[in-house]
Image 1 (cartoon, one colour):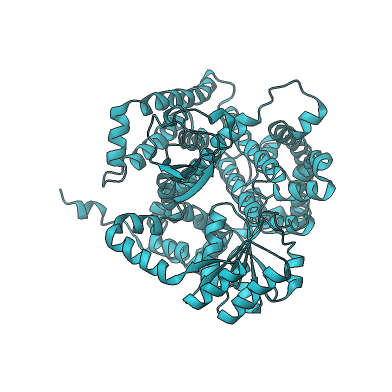
Image 2: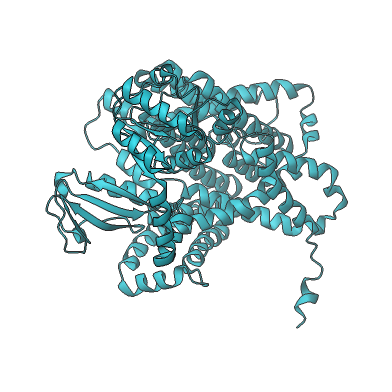
Length: 630
């Protein structure tokens, strides 16, 4: 059989164009400094442009492969959406005590669920109003389109402001997660019923949900079998990549089973596959998840969004005729109203401004609203004109919502345990990135205007000022617990700043680089902690020669793995053996320090209150270790 002859009729030129757009878009956004606009929005916009000026030259047959890859990207997007959800957080938020109004308002799960119910109610009312101005095939399904939100937009905004781990940030995230889960379930059931009616086959959807729990229980049992654990460990990083293959197998099992029930249920199947993997991995940013992110956001998902832009036809909006602008205005107002009004529940806890800001942030829509609209268009539940309006609204809300959030919600103050870096050199930026990976807030003091803007554009906190000016540290609310790292490019300036901090503020936690023995002695007399460049270079060379694999592994994978010291402060751990504590599978204890002694821990090693353990692992694993030991 001649393989080349079989596939010679495929035209890869359209795929080359889409791949080029996916590659160029992030570069273009970086050059134009469009950091606040989601990349997928720009992919849709550029896809629309090339669709008008380039794809008209391609035959429909030549784009068949793009339609397949775009649908695969759509499924992968739903899979990764499920993967973003932390089921542990939802379970932890379930109420366990008798409810009072105060407990209700402070419970993220109950508040998020209440916001969702109010959103559904208001969305249906809004759909009824808009039905007076534009014909709708199905009012309830159109209302469901408006209840979606976008976790992928919300989390980066909260992370950028340092609010992701705050009580307010967790309230917003959980409200968005609940909206994602329940809206996908509602889509699946509603689409099936509208297409097939109340048939016994609807129980098959419940069967997929039941399969989710069967897979979960089976996976937990298999992970405990030593032979299975050994085989997975041996094959996970080999050419076979068994964990990636197993993940894809699990995804396809759910998609294929859903496909047998109906294409409209495939969305739920892919989502449940991702949710199952999230439960298995406990949200660890392991190498497996990095690989899946690379597969999805590196190839399949950009194809989906570029094709959304290519297929977007704004001329369809003309079909709305005289009601076009009125409908679009009502649509946009309703999209915000159905989220902002329910979010006022947060007023009692956080005040009106933060409640309104949270409502505007969860009003951002992206993948789910486009997905729901695409399914509705395919099933003729909405018209092509409404589908075009939905895509337009998704673009607007993703751009406007983060801006409104930042304008309404006052800028979060730097936390008390912040790190202050004086000087915006490349070393300072790298250090700030490393601490950001550890969820430690840093602020870089930089006088040069251009360098200050560059630091902010990298998503880091920066303060425009002179490190030799005492007022800078007053404005930053310097406290004795803050570490100050002096990293300007001038040796004389570094010394002056250290003298200012020691003499004017009597600050003790100062770290500086000592390029020579004389400077080191000067710093020592001031009580400044120093970094000896000579010893650092010698130690690095020593590691490169004696421990090259270990050194390169730690340096090259710092975004995946890191080392951390954790002091044991939990009395529940006092006297327990290491094997009795269920640590995360992506982390490991390397050393235990007890007073002046250091031990290599084994399963029978007993941990004591006050011990300091040195652990290696992913950030999620280290967070879990810290939670168990402290």
